[in-house]
Length: 442
Length: 56
Image (cartoon, rainbow over the protein chains, first blue to last red):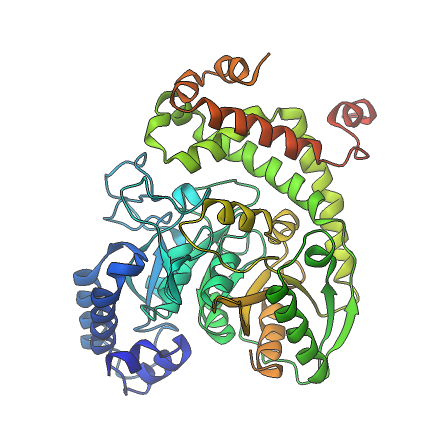
């Protein structure tokens, strides 16, 4: 029974609670039982709010309105990346540097989910300050991939991806500054949306780089992500289009600008072939080289992150883990003129993405040229980061949704792609993604 | 100026003490990413020279 409840999608659980067939107390207990048994090896959670969740579930059960509409996520459990403030809990950012005093108020996103009737189960692990890589020199162990615990769970919202793949919770919240929602989504075989820049509130979220940071939902289906975006961004649900889509395929990022692994290349080719078989009109799209997007995006990210961390790096560098310290130091050596040049280049790159979207419903691109790697192999982790294809849409601010393609890597780990929509068109992107998901049975 | 002198000039003496190689790698990474910026985009100086403030 515990297993059956844990595997419910957000929408299935929400609807069962609405119909009175599932009690929030029973549901929360089932998930907490599963977490208690399995999170000792996965380490998805940094902080579990079990008693608080049980109390809230009982309150929802006992005070359920008898007549009238229920809030949209009534009784749905969720968990957040540990960079979001939750009243009464410390915001660890997975770092020794953060104060252990509890936050005095909730992040806006937590407030929205609470108002929608959702139940917080806890806070989730990440790469320290949402940058660097999985490390063993911090108070919390790195999050491991539930599909194979010898493998990474993605950068940097690793707990947000792993908690879904482990069926600990049907909805998680992550942040994406250079791909940190889309990476753990694909690596864990779930769906993650980096919304349009500014579409979801960042109030109460510890920043990495202000002009790139986005907050967004991860879940196990496109429909679940859309339900969450109804709460987080006020999106109205849209039906999946009935006619096949016109999709722009951006091949050169993984085929020419990088060298893909054979399993990754085959998985993307297979997904594109299935889209064509389902009637999609496919158009080859050429954007500026990935390296241009990366140079601009990382120059901006490093400079903005250093502005946040400078005092700590000067006065208490020993408190960082080795990886985050090294990466964050990079911003010390980027001067203001180069930062401004990167911001100016960003305008042209954003225009190129917008132009490419004019003739199609959405774009499709790889999320990475390489599959997930082992967690104990620093060289492969470095190579995996270098093979990332996520920064272009942080630079441009367009919404990008990562979803699994159904295939697996040679090591049996999930693989995925990303779909990109128009700026502010998150609802249309979600509707298109629903078509893609059903058309090719992803 | 060497990478470590540059780091010290920015008040990062403690970081240099902890792991000088990491500091060298950070300097190298910054140079690599900045070198990747499109040289055809007008730099801030050229931008400033072309900027004509509106007459209030």
